[in-house]
Image (cartoon, rainbow, N blue to C red; front, side, top):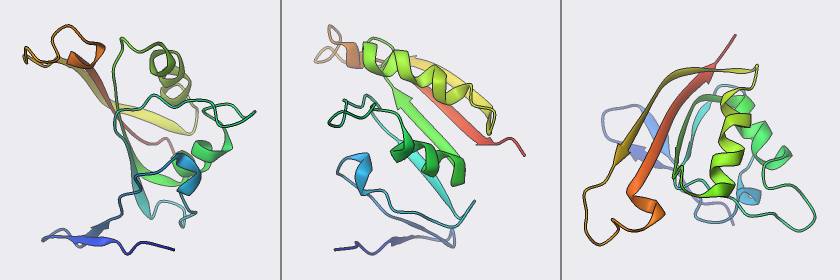
Length: 121
């Protein structure tokens, strides 16, 4: 069952939240959408690589890609460079932050890295 996208107020855009695995991402027209990977740290999907065609196509077709991940999590830290260094996209900006919250201070989730990517052509 396809979810309907929610309009973003005043933006002329819409937002579709896909809470499941990346396998639920459907194809869009080239440059017709943005892709946000929040809390990126995918696990292997069966015998397939965690980053493969399931994410490769949406990343290549997105007008903008935002990635948020914890550099302390090995899975994400090892995979994000292969996304950021792709020839089909360019790094617009990146930044790191540390969340000052005692509830998560001793966890890997207190440290975050963000990347904003756009098509290179």
